[in-house]
Image (tube, rainbow, N blue to C red; front, side):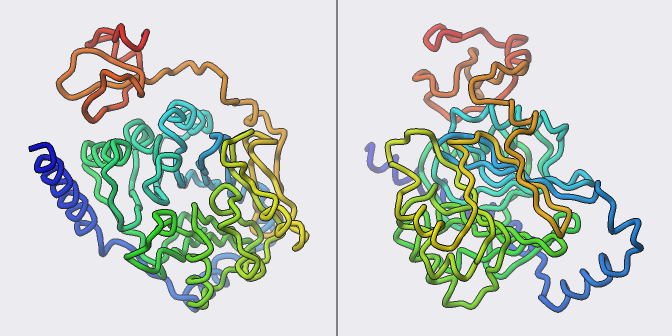
Length: 365
């Protein structure tokens, strides 16, 4: 009976997932290289000197310190924003409050690179707490509660999923965003479904690779994508199964950022990966050593800030807004990992929860 129920639940999840993807499968806007070249010439090269030297005309990339996980916030001068991943479940409050600290209420694109908890754990909280325009996910399902929480948050906000399709591109303001991978629908390793994204802002480019492994890297190389980028987000937290030398040479970055937890049990980043980066004279920055890392580009120059006041938002800070979790039918509010939470959860602020719910005694709220 249990096995039959489990099969039914998996089938329901697959149907819901398929409906989400089908509903928005045609919403990507593809931009050819020639079209983008023409756009750049018209948009940037014909501007007068005053406009082109405007110091406020920038993009910022925040590599949020979420320990052994990934979360990257991208924003430009015109309040266009993108979030790539949102850390572990326990990072939900940290990520939400970090985004709020930047004065952001609306996120144009939320991207979950792949369904591992250290990438999508806080994604439901982000979707629940911000105005989100579009959610991009790879075409792969998972039966974990974490993944179901993300699907529920999308459903509750009446959003649909835009599938990550390699070769498709779109704009975040004046920044071109090109999906490089996944290029397959049947990978053995869930990491290889990672959304690999190249951002091009004027004359600067940035490559974000999720947990893409060397198998996926070789596939990308064989397809002839233009990977050249000024900055590389190192794949899989610096694992030795990612950032192969041929891939690294093709990207040829000046800078690399590794999102990784201090003294993690996986021993990331591995010495092999660090040696490969050093062999190419790539300046490498790590969140386990520096905390939040903020990269600023004016389209020609890149500045990497390790000492910004924004960096003072550390993992152990108590934020003024605290978030708790409820269920559709329950009468109590809980911490996210409370053992009493048997069904899919909804994130709300503690202040709101206290108006209609009572605290759970089991998780000491």
